Length: 145
Image (tube, rainbow, N blue to C red; front, side):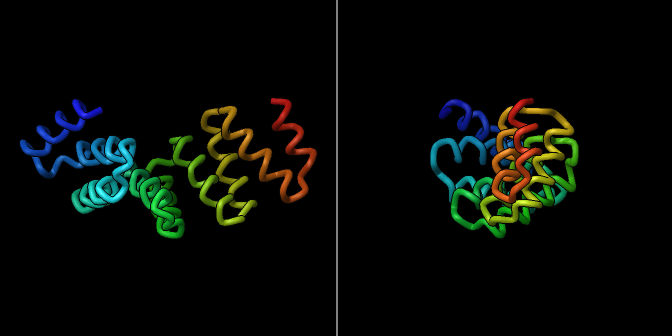
């Protein structure tokens, strides 16, 4: 992991406006538990390219882990607008919506994720939300899939 950080630092020394390298470094820093630094890199990437879905997504993940869920959800939604075919981004919006107890929105986001690429984790997340709002038959159907 430190080797990867070194390579990313070298890339950024050569080109400080390399938004992709900043996003990649944000991911690595998050894995090391350096959330404030990770968020700083995600924000630096956004300052360079505010249309980067990956930068918005990393900012969302960093903000969520820093207990700033409202801002995290805002960035996650922007990420899905910029990259609407990424199931992981839709899944994450669903998780953030569930954390806010907006279960219909969580189900909608998980459904979008599943429509793009079905995954056990998205089905499980949707099933739990459906049960919490009394959609038992839909939840049972997800459980059987």
